[in-house]
Structures are given as structure tokens and as C-alpha cells.
Image (cartoon, rainbow, N blue to C red; front, side):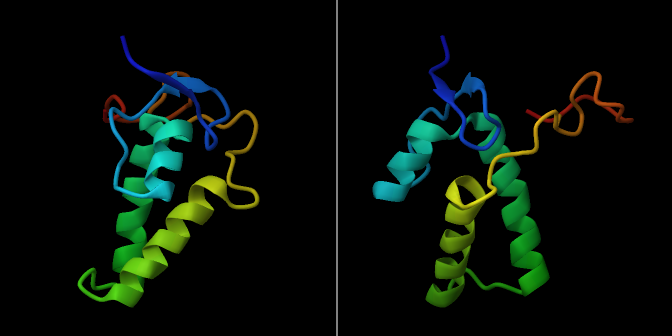
Length: 102
């Protein structure tokens, strides 16, 4: 049975991550408060940030920027998704194409 969390991003109880995504206080906070679905959303958004900003992950300042963006994405002001929002690919969301990725 999956471990459930009250997801801070999506505002409902959903399956949580299997383990903290990285060491430290922020990794533990994410583990305790972020669902698998919201974490997947972050991973996709992170790719956009890296590509759009031309980030090089070997650069410590670029990694720091990503960590700041990650914290804002989940825990910043206005981080929760708008009420009534459904992710792309969710049945009934009016989207086209195949099933949502897992």
C-alpha cells in the first residue's frame, strides 16, 4: 500500500514519494508534504527552467537557483494549484492524446 501525504501543491491526499528526493531538511520536507504526482510536475518544470535559462548543473550557482525555484514551487506564496485545476491527461480534463504518464 502506498504511503499517503496531504500534498501541499495539489491540495489533496495522494500517494507520496517512496523516499526523500535528496538529503537534508528540504528533501525531508518534500518527502513529508509532496505527492508523487506533484514531484513529477516539478521534474518537468525543472527541465523547462534548465533549458530556458541555459543552466549548467555543474555550476553551483545554477544548482542553487534550481533549489530556490524548487522551494518556491512547493512552499512559496501561491504555490498551491488553483481550485478546480486538473492536470493534463487526467480523464475528464478535456485533453486530447494518450493517457497521462506515470
